[in-house]
Image: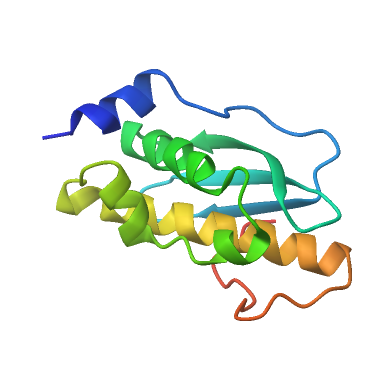
Length: 137
């Protein structure tokens, strides 16, 4: 049902927690399943994501996709992070059951919401970034 990578990221999540003075924070949720994902970014002056943390309320797949997504963007530029898709997260985890694909979508949306918050706070425009629709306040 779940790949070894999904189980590993669920049982040993990377980058769990929060950043007190985050450059950007994105929170998204799925009303149908109740999952809530929050991603915290620490972006340096050159636009490199120095650190990233997450807090997720949800199932094992939600925790695993959050963990993998943070691993995929840590050390990357803001522009590279924007390119991370739910499909890329699923591939990195060696797949998800069809009923859990929405978790990877939340991970992509949480990254974009955090990037949007970062751009808003720093009064910058990130090429290709659209205002997130699925955010929680």
